Image (tube, rainbow, N blue to C red; front, side, top):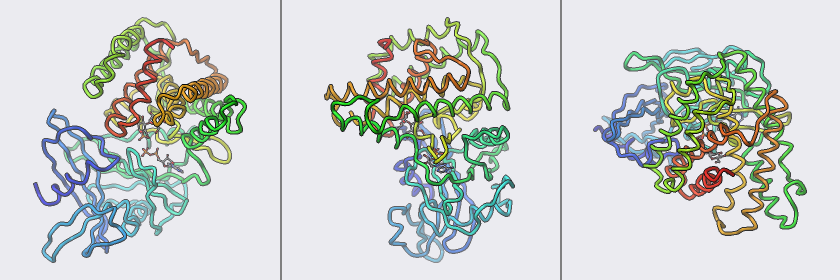
Length: 455
Ligand SMILES: Nc1ncnc2c1ncn2[C@@H]1O[C@H](COP(=O)(O)OP(=O)(O)O)[C@@H](O)[C@H]1O
Ligand SMILES: O=P(O)(O)O[C@H]1O[C@H](CO)[C@@H](O[C@H]2O[C@H](CO)[C@@H](O)[C@H](O)[C@H]2O)[C@H](O)[C@H]1O
């Protein structure tokens, strides 16, 4: 391995966006090019990590380079590499403001730099020449905000094919949907093996003065905990009205997606395929989260029932990973973000037709999460557990009512299919939490106790 790959191999596993946590590495290779040669220079690297199980992932890593250490960037320091003129100090370029300007300069110019192509959407002004600030809520990807005008999301894991985030935002723009932020452009990189180009980044209009749904929902839960004698509908921070509007917004997004992109009724084979996928996901998750074993038989039965259900289902494009952290409350209503699907799924799978029930289940799970995350510190407090359940039920119901009213469907809490999708999501969350936030694993695990028991 070169000094550069050694450096990246040391640094990457500690990054939030790195999805291979807990997996054993068999090797790492890197291929890079410069996007800008000024000081600091900006280079972009495709880093391929091979795991001992034979799988591999390719990550996009932009680095900024300085000839002397920059004290103020100490938390963004990646490592030093010796060059012909002495040491070169590498920093996480997304946290080095001085190295963020070239992204928009190239987008405005519709440049091609080496294998990277910049595509402005040509619909609105792109704020060229400004540095970008990395957002603090970094999750699977890394985003830069440019002057409260535009937000550039860098997709960390590269896969051949158009990223569904770009594809779906473009489709909803055509449908003039009111619940999305505008698409300003995107960036792609050619595949080294001649496959389809991978989407590297997406530029969107920044929605100012907005709060994400997770923050709003959890403050409502906090209000409820603070009022020992009042119920969820009596406290000032009641969230049910927002949950209902969120249900309406979700239904509007689904209706437009069904209209502008392909959709069809699910045939009988689909039910058996989905039951098989859910079971396979459970079996794989059992190897990562041994605590799932106590629910495994009940979940297998729940999934087996999916193959026999007669509930009608429409197959269409959906969000794929809808939760409260993916929605923004603006001064006028709810905006839905991040149509990328579950980051751990292969891209081809994320672009397949799915059912809107997957999104509904994701949001229902999120109400459980918001209600229960404060129980992590006090799991044995029965009063708080009772209030959490009450809050979750009230908001789950309100969301379903809003969705049903706006979508012309009736979402039933008795639906075996919806329950199976909720359980499937909770199994995914168990793996996600075990790898990223082990102290939160109890949240999806306790929901699985409820779902497996049929409550
Ligand atoms: N268009 C936007 N306007 C304002 N804030 C945004 C916008 N897009 C994303 N954000 C903020 O960035 C966060 C992360 O964006 P998201 O698309 O969910 O990225 P990730 O794939 O990393 O989860 C969101 O939770 C939101 O706070
Ligand atoms: O936002 P991402 O696309 O990165 O989604 C991943 O991370 C989410 C956590 O940030 C994770 O969501 C889980 O935790 C949320 C609270 O932090 C909760 O609202 C969600 O319901 C729960 O699933 C998501 O699953 C994961 O894909």
